[in-house]
Amino acid sequence: MLDVDQIRRFHQQGFVVIENFISAQQRQRLMARAKQQIESFEPAAKPTIFTTNEQQRASDAYFLGSGDKIRFFLEEEAIDSEGHWQVPKHRAINKIGHAQHVLDETCAQVLGELPTSNICQQLGMESPRAMQAMHIFKQPGIGGEVGLHQDSTFLYTQPLSCIGFWLALEDADRENGCLQALPGGHQIPLKQRFHRDGKGSASMTTLDDSPYPQTNLSMLEVPAGTLVILHGQLPHYSAANTSGRSRQAFTLHYIDAACDYAADNWLQSDLGQ
Ligand SMILES: O=C(O)CCC(=O)C(=O)O
Image 1 (cartoon, rainbow, N blue to C red):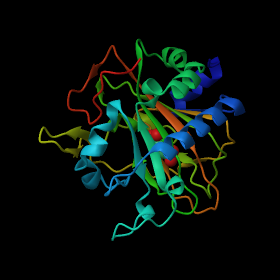
Image 2 (image 1 turned 135 degrees about the horizontal axis):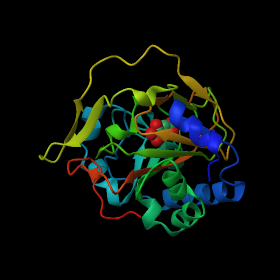
Image 3 (image 1 turned 60 degrees about the horizontal axis):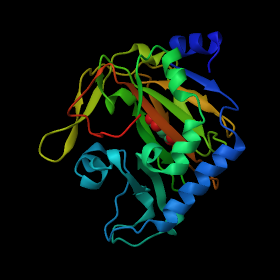
Image 4 (image 1 turned 135 degrees about the vertical axis):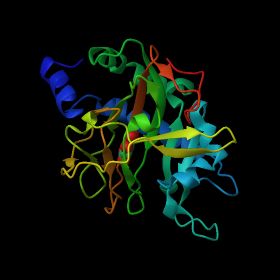
């Protein structure tokens, strides 16, 4: 649970960093389970690359259907233009998502040991619902950047309610692509919505085209075991992993079930807690 100072910091700066939130044993269970899942994953002839390019992402049925499944997405550099693998399978995975917090017993158990739902309530959520889980790998050398974004762009409710929990499974620093966040940036309006278009695809719509404030991003270099809680409107980013070290993280995104979850959000699922 959060103390008064941590709650104040979340409301003031839009994020809060809490070291030693998840134990080494819990981290190992999540990482070992992901390793097993990858071993049993059999990639399609034309596997899905995870990309920050929305047009490509929107046109991908494998991605759009992953809200209530456990699916595997590859790093952009893992496969060349002719479809040849550049790295072994376990080094190619960008992320696993988006419903292992419900569908996978180990994930559900470990996450159930963490007081994330209670923390949501401390932060003002009436009826927390864990909508989306992601095991993010940021592979050594080829782990791609995640562009500056606000999480409510992807999990839109009225009123806005998304809160992200980002768990460092391994040390994260500037070389291996730690999170970077705009302090106080949760006060700016939501800039974009990523939504289904009713024709089997999805696209980005601009809601507010003013530029992001020219404030420096805070570099959130954190040891393994740290939790970063992110307000849904907080602009955040992570750079490519230029190091030889991996940077695994696990994220869980909540919305308030007391708010209206948009029927055209890309992520549609009847699962959730
Ligand atoms: O782990 C990362 O590199 C980025 C994760 C992120 O931006 C998110 O979960 O919203």
